[in-house]
Image (cartoon, rainbow, N blue to C red; front, top):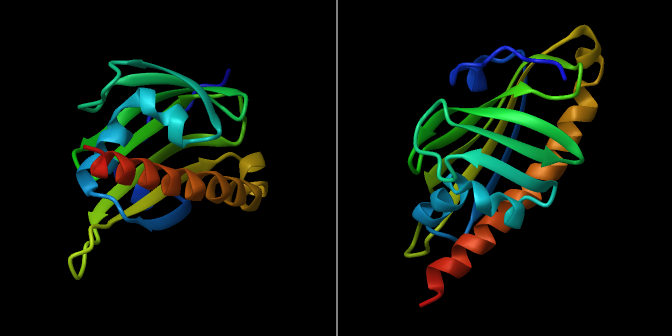
Length: 167
């Protein structure tokens, strides 16, 4: 399984290839954050994820690790940014693909409440430094990531909203 270089948090903004997907959900930012930080919840809101193993289960700081199965692929990840209610990001450090030298993914959160309505803007960022082969496949990767993350973030929002109104 190929190892990738550990990406720093700023890679989310400086990567040569980026995929950005944004949704606004009717849920409090605090509940959205709780679901992002709780590794066990990911299989409930991210349909492409079959399982997750994490140390610890609730991420609180950079350096924490997890192993996940996404679309049948085993991926090793390491937290690179854990800023409560602002940014959750990880670097992919090992995966079975030959398309990247460095890869990181993150979700940024922003309060989007207005006119008395609670809302959170969730912005997914996929950041990649592609190999030669990966460069040829960036369009396909972008469509796949957008197709996976947009509904996942919408589902996270529905779960966060339900949890917020449940007594």
